[in-house]
Image (tube, rainbow, N blue to C red; front, side, top):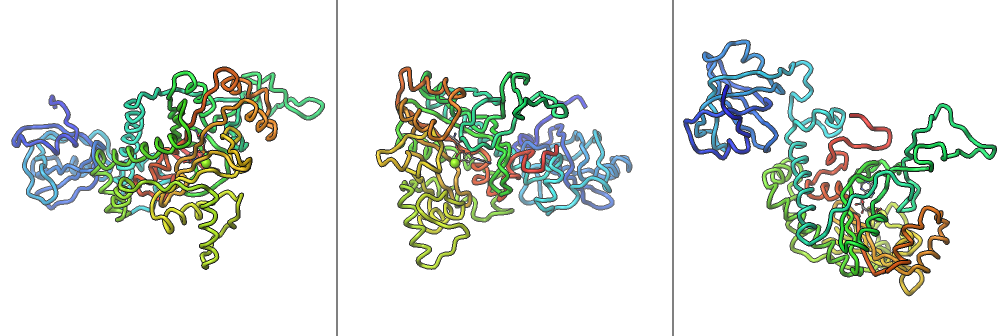
Length: 467
Ligand code: 4AD
Ligand code: MG
């Protein structure tokens, strides 16, 4: 078979009918009759299959028998304009080589319409389905869009460490990293562990955010972003939480909270538009299969400007809704941390477009946020989205050394871990702002998938780390 392989995405665009080409891929279905076989084949380069027409008299019966759903084959044949509707070209096979068979009795992806729960149990094979092929192609495209967005605007991609000794969000949800022998842990008289003996000579964890190191870079390079995995040991089994997720964190010197909101809005719109412009087949497929409102929702976000509203006003709206008889599961009062039902009420019921909520009570936000003059709130901003709730969290940062130090002491954050962070405020401090976008939350929105476990190849959640 001395011909160069053509990817199916390219083969489907060819018009040089009559020419011989080679395609390779996995069999989706085979149907036909005694004299002719129709094989739908996919190689992952596109959601679309190419149809292979194989005359029974041209091929050994045993070869045809082995061409079953899931088998991997290489086909050499003539490119022919297709008669069937919805497809442009097909291949009339002259030679078929079987790379790998897939036993009909044990290959789990035989029929269509498997549940998402079942597919999660076979996450090693689910990329072979149309749905997950589409999701993971979109995931790739979103990553490219993100790098392109920042690169075009002069941001530098900055790599922050994954192993760290500081808890950026201060929520105590960190996975510890150690090489100590857990079967033989030596404790001192007080019952404490001496981390002097550990690999780094101190207690370390997987990072929950690259922000603190990102701030070091922003106050030197001006505008940076991180894009990497982050880890949170929060025991929340929701359709929106992962223990390992990817986060994009831009950080910009001289930006205030309004610049930060402008950046967030422009950024999300860029990503959504990118999906509509560059992943049309996949987005259309997901729209038609699962969520007839998907494309409309994506286009809707591009048209509207996001509402910008202080937290205090948001609470008033929720309280008014309750007074009018709306029922929430969780209580609403000034100072409460909003649950996703509250966020979604503001976005989906009240404003009917994305909302950026600002100026949250300082008690429910992290230590680094810029304190407002009222002494009660901080210059935080959460971007709230339809169907998702919080998609971005960020703030203007407290750049005043004394105020930041006071807050750190108030919260009992160990100072020995923070000296390098405080140095940015000691030497040439400047106003600056940033935010974090949860990559999988963005993907939930763009794909219309309803569970965050279905937009990351191998999800990590409480009690699951298979594959
Ligand atoms: O709001 P968060 O906790 O903010 C930070 O980590 C800041 N350091 C960001 C910054 O200002 N540079 O997280 C940011 C976003 C959330 O809005 C959400 O989209 C996502 O990260 N996120 C999660 N996504 C999936 N699973 C989880 N457990 C998540 N926790 C947060
Ligand atoms: Mg948050």
